[in-house]
Length: 154
Image 1 (cartoon, rainbow, N blue to C red):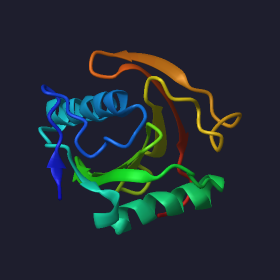
Image 2: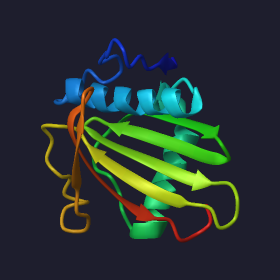
Image 3: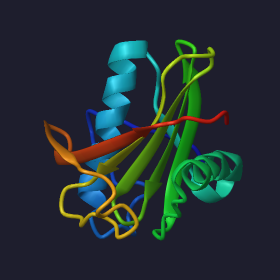
Image 4: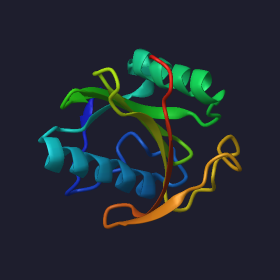
């Protein structure tokens, strides 16, 4: 069942099984606030099991671009288009959030971003490969993030 993320009243709905559920909920709310303020888009997530095509698209990009497979269980996903950009997110039980920004225009920006919830360790599959910058967030505490540019067509 879809859930529209409220960034004013942060909730762990859908994320309860995560050991860092509150921090992950804050991270999810931070993303929701960004898209509402910048694009007037309501950030709505769906259980990963109910939107396998979004999860598969993200997993395929990770595998083809960097030979990555995320070990943690995916909890929620979302996919939408704003301003000519396809955005897709997956929120994992570990506290990891992965987003894909994929410009629909040839030559546009295309990247995969990783964000780590406060209190979680860097996942083994990302450790040593990516350096994570720190960012403060009122909703999520401290977010650590990294990214890579997508080279292929997906």
